Length: 97
Image (cartoon, rainbow, N blue to C red; front, side):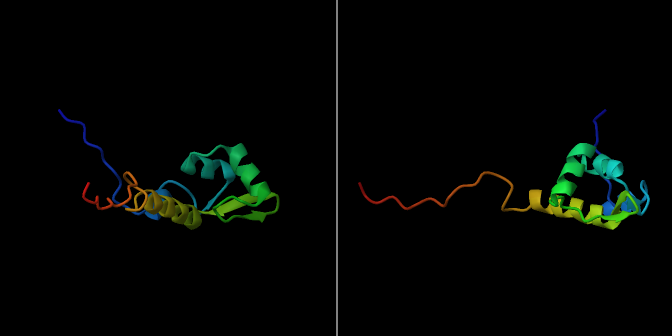
């Protein structure tokens, strides 16, 4: 019997919303993006983490819609025709030798 891969047909937001609350902490964002909590915190402190966040009291919070949008953006970037496959220059015409 063959092994079939079942990919979700839902959007990233629908898929994540079925598993996570509307606001996420750093640990949850790490689970979703496969990033370590320390790496996320370091990027946040340098001001270069790509997903927007804000603070409520002392707690760092991410909106689920922003995390889903980031995932969709990354998926589109890695599956675009300009980034997939070998990069080759068009063949140059060879003159008579």
